[in-house]
Image (cartoon, rainbow, N blue to C red; front, side, top):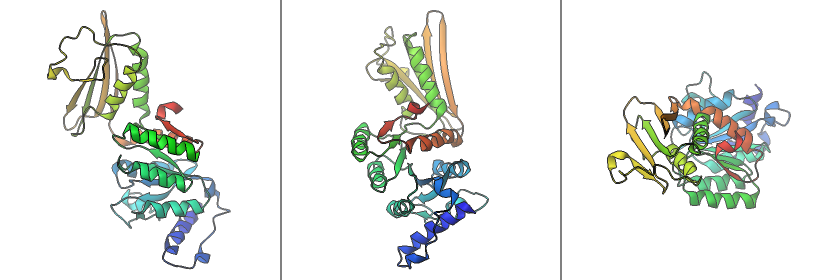
Length: 301
């Protein structure tokens, strides 16, 4: 019941925008859930957003306090997520309205941004203006956007975590690949996805970027640079990426290394969006203590 009373307060604040007497608002000052991290999910109706709602509801020390999306507006986010009971939190299209309600509660707040690269800068600025931190997980976020957000967050002394991946397994694969790259000079990346998307994938690009920043030159004896069947070369260090798309394939990334007489490979498969939830919960717990922008969840592993 403790969590319900706080959600009731949110609903009263929401109604107060329609000129309802604000003195009818119910106080939660003595409510234990006030100590919880209040989490707003922007992009709540997406598959990853719905998974996040369920994961946050089950996690200790945090609660879903707002759901933002352009779909299913007005519907209860718990029902949209097929939960056993409604959360009494309607999906709202206006992020600012939800931010205003949470900021009035004086609780620690975090906005999870699952939108897209065109809106993320304005979303983080709005969250920061209301005193809330942000966790950003959007596809194809541009480096200039990250740099602009970094400067903004530093001036505001407000934390933001930009996470190209929320998969702990993917991060561990990247760390293993970095370690292996010092011992092998021949490297190729092979990935598979079930659905068409922009290739190489963000995961493959990030692995290539990480390995390219180590001062190594790979695949020196490869003379087939111009042959398209040999995959795409990323950067100037000779790293190749091969991408497959077949229905039913898991989202998989494998990095192959070879040396005299041996082949070493590290592989990571994602079969369900649930694999991202432990990383998301970790990101929420960490970002509330930040006063600047951090790029990459791996900084906290």
